[in-house]
Length: 444
Image (cartoon, rainbow, N blue to C red; front, top):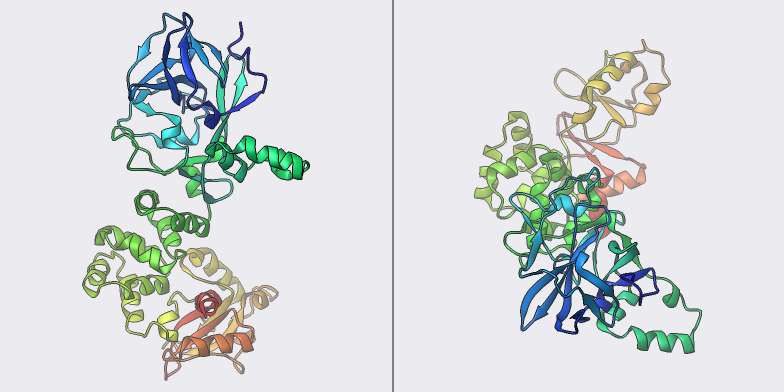
């Protein structure tokens, strides 16, 4: 007899299984199905046991002891061993390819929580769609005598099923609009892209982390979007696991209100490591919004004295001024350099610079002599010197005291990607890039 003798569909849903009576072969009712235990070590986890409740107590029965499974009743062997626990022993065998969820259970964890406890009715990170979504249901498929988890369901249809309204809603659609997409399509996330979000309600002996390669492969802006959708507990868990460089790039993309909540309780030494990896203008913006004493502690913990000095200079300017917006990471070059020299410099310093679209030619006193677009340099001969081809007549520049709106107007008028900031003696202080003013324009 097949385990699924009375179940014709290839797939089944978690929500429709809940509350199914569990009965022994001799007719003794043990309780009702509450959850599933699965082997998280697999890409598509196989069901290891079913959890049930009786008199408000939690028990489990191994899947191997299930005789028949359907939505109406689950029959188990009369001599089945019954376990009593909220968790199930972690799989000891090592898989060649482990699931994302398997990588999230770490440390001293020796027990796995029930599937629904971690996933159902909770938010997860969809690493494929790069977003946070709420799981309404979980889809399984039959594979021989086993059940495997294949998808997390997130759409309206799964929500109706989870609430128990699916038969009613389906009946209405079949009468009113029988060809409706609602009846034939469901929003699903392939299980291999599912990341659980750490939750305080999961058993204390089960530690769930978001430190995975999939998260770190996302663009910082996508990670920022995910962080903004999480609660404080999950947000802290994700952000704390990012390495300093990625944490810095991500923090620069997060909305200001969320940004401040993420860093308010951070240790100054830990924050200094992140700040050191940020563009100096972004770092100054963050520190400027902080309590003066804490900002000072963070700056004092920065190991790179040059970065420390640059940030200090930026903090002297008003936040809405050109000086407050500018980055001090400028591609400064001497007029005597050749095309070949500049290309070698780019190879050496490209990671340190905010932009290499424009070259800024300076003298020994850092006075701005001219500018040159990289694309114009590339078409020249190797031995040509910058002073021969640099622009000297129509250099658009701005003072550090100028308001950001004045900066935006000039950049718009002359179609500039970057604009240099100079003091009264024409000394080059920094540059402002279009992205530095764009978010302010969008807010306006």
